[in-house]
Amino acid sequence: MTQTEHRLRNFLHHGNVAAYYFGGLFNKGRQTVAREFWVTTEADGILSAGTIWPFGKPSSFYESRPNYPLFLLETELDERIGQFSHRAAHRPASEPMPTTTS
Image 1: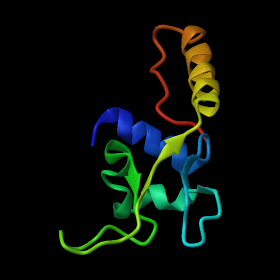
Image 2: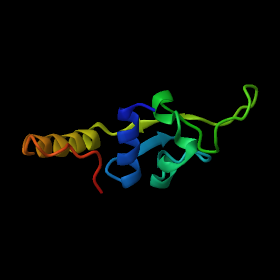
Image 3: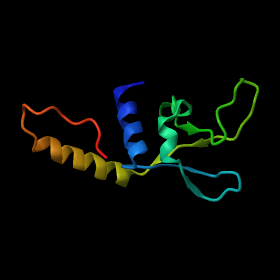
């Protein structure tokens, strides 16, 4: 897992940003991926693939399960990155850069 993916998963788990997919069992529109999902092994590779399997990844190549593209809202990301950049700009050079916040 890359450092960027690890950080983003932390942000998703802590609720700083949310991930969404459209569809679902009864096509109910925009669905939010549960915060708790991002700390499980099921979340491995989801961000890099950009696809989510709400009922788990298929266990074999010939098995078919519903899957949907994963979306993040640009406004949430901009807000989060803006907060992080603002703190980093006002941080003393001797202080280490924070990795995540709650």
